[in-house]
Amino acid sequence: MIATIAYFLFFILILLEIITFFKKIPLIIIQSLLLLISLLLIVEIINRSIQIQFTALTNTFEALVFFTAFINLTLLLFSFWKKNNLAHAILFIGTLIAFIMLSIASSPLVPDTVKPPIPALQSAWLILHVALAFVGESFFAFSFAASIFYLLTNDPDKKQNADKLITTTIGIGYPIFTIGALIFGAIWAQYAWGRFWSWDPKETFALITWLVYTIYLHLRLMTKVSVKVTVWVAILGFLFTLFTFFGVNYLLPSLHSYR
Image (tube, rainbow, N blue to C red):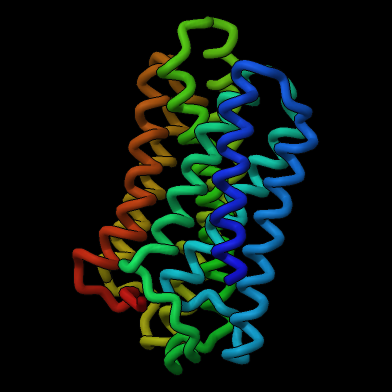
């Protein structure tokens, strides 16, 4: 019910962001909706956690709700930092990404049944692993929105600003993702399965995602390759992020495919 309210608030938010392209709407309204939606989704996680007596980050629905909330919070932080036309465009693209994530969570593909996790998932290491991985990926989602904007605009100044945003958000998300997805993930694997690494499809594609963003940072910070190339690498990184979550869950047999 709470997630459904957040879903319909997204419609209002997207409508207002579209109107903003033609008629100025106070940014505080957009910010308030971003915050309200995030708080509602966090309340949804807390409510489910109380019901199952464990942190509700153990299935696809809960993960998507958490991911959506933190994409919104990332957008909210950005809106306080940048208050110009560039901000409006990237906020709009980012909001669409968050809305798509919540739409998938609300679809028949993702059951929202509240049930206690299996014993292998009842670990604090799992919660740290999942939570930090998705916080890092929320910054990757933002970098994807900025990358799309970079490709769509022809304004050199806006391209330069978008490039800086891509580098900044990947620079923030990269260490968080590294710690959450890889390091804490390996510790949890040792706890749950008795080994740090097993080349499970989810582990493998998480590593590939990490390598793509590593390549991005190397190209952007240590070489003179064109910015457009690095932008495409950033886009590829987020596509691998999505495949690691959705592709592995629905297409590949995996120890991580808890739905």
